[in-house]
Amino acid sequence: MNSPISISSKTLPTQETKQISPNSKTYSTSPPNTEKTCFDPNQIFYASETGSYLVETGTHYRTYGRKSPVIAGIKRHLRAAGASENDLKDLTGEQLENIELDRACDWTGGLAGYRRGIMIHEGRKFLITSEPDMLEVKDIPWPMLQSIFSQAFPAADALNVFKAWLQGGVNAIRTQTHQPAPMLVLAGDANAGKSLLAHITKTIFGGRSSNPMTSWTGGIVWNDNLVASELLLIDDSVSSTDPRARKTFGSNFKEAIYAGNVSIHKRLKSSLDLRPVWRVMVCCNETPENLSVIPPLEEGIEDKIMLLQVSKIQTPMPASTPEEKTAFADAIRKELSGFLHYLKGFTIPEHLRDTRSGVTAWKDRALLNAVTQISPEKQLENLLALAISKGFFNIEKGANRWMSAAEVQSILVDRSSPTSSQAQTLLNYHATCGRGLTYLAKHDSPFVTNTRTRNGTAHYLITRPLGGEVE
Image (cartoon, rainbow, N blue to C red):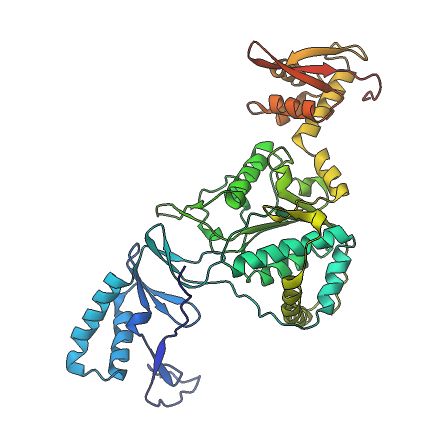
């Protein structure tokens, strides 16, 4: 990628204007400042897809859909450069033609992790119009942040994987190179401080975030709102308990973070493949309903999700009133420069390293147990246990029976079975029962103890244990 553009629009002095009383009905047509903006043609780009012009302002690109302000700005620049009034029209026209030919761009917009400027991607010219606001790194103390982090993660491993995940994200953004990383799930009591940790993460990642939930669960096909956000943040979102939606979420997460380029779908425009620098964070309460926001921990995604329990954080400064919150945010931002300096030298403990992601997908044991209890597979096992204990499978204690997934499902959803209502909800789409039984057979379930294929159809050994009957 080319070096980022840092030149600014130029300005010209204006004639002095008379001050107007706020109550006056007469208004000046001159700008209130003492300078008029002019446009250096070398700082103007043309978006061929939309027919608009983008002008470098020094901090961002300003879009103009009409030619007239662009022409006016170029004329001011040419006058300042000494062009005569007789030559202005021809010179301005020539500059516009050069812009539309030589500085035409095939795509314009923000791209997570990348600096402003021109990027050549697959033979096409892209203009990156915004960039993350990365903080300066300074060797200064960060006592408030130390207090916050140590309160949130009393366990050393939890604290270290949090720091390692942040370190990898910052390095990826600074080097403009995406690194696959686990989804970081922060779970804790209400008001424990999860949103504070999310705010800190967003700030050190450059200050941009978007919620991918609607796009990744199939609610909408557009995902262009995510393209310019380094942090994809799901904070206390209401999620569907439907296993299909959760599996779709997990599938889209894997594709977005662990695959190559991402297909970007913009409204009324053709899709294109890009590689944003992304990391995903989920903040939720510890209740089963809230934990269901994450994808089921099944094979293929279990090693791509981190579960960290957040303990109650007592803020080092008062943060109740708007003024206190502003002062606290400012103090945190100042310390973050010191924390970033610390992260540069942070070494991930050997037992927490991962060759692909940098840090392993560590899981808090209590949270892992809670998530497992709400998994579709665990729900299926509970329904099996209930139906078996009530005699609906006609299996004696200590005995077993080979059955297909269809046979198991027909018993569970039967109207006379106590599992009917729940089973119809859980098994309401194709192949759910079979996948669940296969999972249980592989994970030492006492109710599904083996599997085999007979005449091309998978069969499962449904077992009634000697003890542990469900009443």
